[in-house]
Amino acid sequence: IGERSKKTLGKVIDYEIDAEHMALSRIFVAKMVLFFRLQEYIFPRKNIVKITKNTVIVKELKELKEGERAAAPSSAYAA
Image (tube, rainbow, N blue to C red; front, top):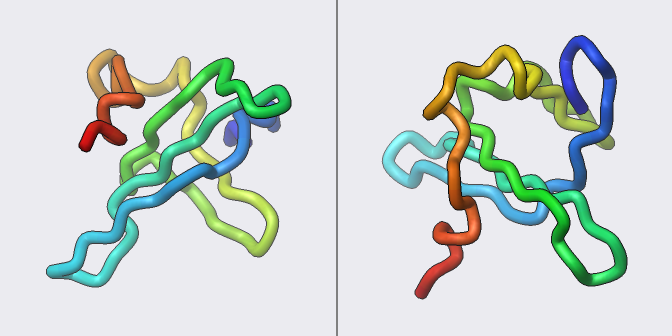
């Protein structure tokens, strides 16, 4: 959910843990219809505002500087 607009950006479909520091390093979010991913975002830890049981609050996409969000998040899943 966007911090200011309260707009749902999608569901968390994956996450990455920094094994050295045992901390969440980023989350992968996708807006999905049936089994199709319409939009995908990657939010690094510094853009995550709050995590609750049912939601993750992140900085608005408009607030992020260019280059802070991934241009091609699907590349993160390449084997």
